[in-house]
Length: 182
Image 1 (tube, one colour):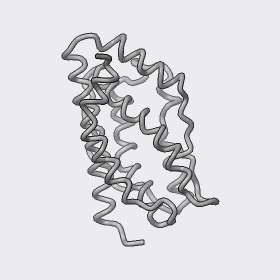
Image 2 (cartoon, helix red, strand yellow):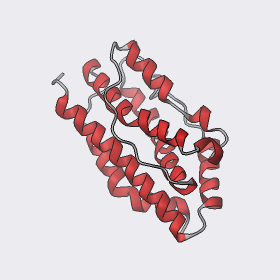
Image 3 (cartoon, rainbow, N blue to C red):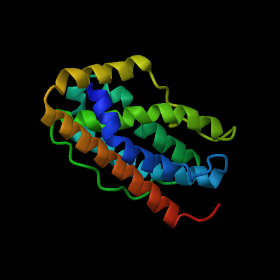
């Protein structure tokens, strides 16, 4: 089984949970879209920062160009919303864990492209509109296959990926619970 298949299978329940939570935001309504971006920021900003601290740039040399924190902050600012309190990110304790975290963040780009179609004209969409580059995705998958060749390494990547999904689930639930009905 490929590393990608192992990650996909092992993280499927966590991925479905996050999709279910974030599907409750109506991106066609400005207030709900703002809350969606706040929830994304609550998780993405600390996860990206934790990946920086764990050496993501040493694992993937193009990591800086993959980061989306700036576009997310820009969209929030355009909507007059400050980033919310952050969830606690996982500790990425080595390249396998970093790759697990990157797998989740890079995979979310594909969904973002589809979601951006629901955002009304005139609303900022730099974050959701961040292009997904098939060659970058392929490069990540190739690095995972190259670097995660032992069972314990794959297990560490899975554990980190599940922890990243948990961050997004927590952030989404928190924003839904604390948000106003719009």
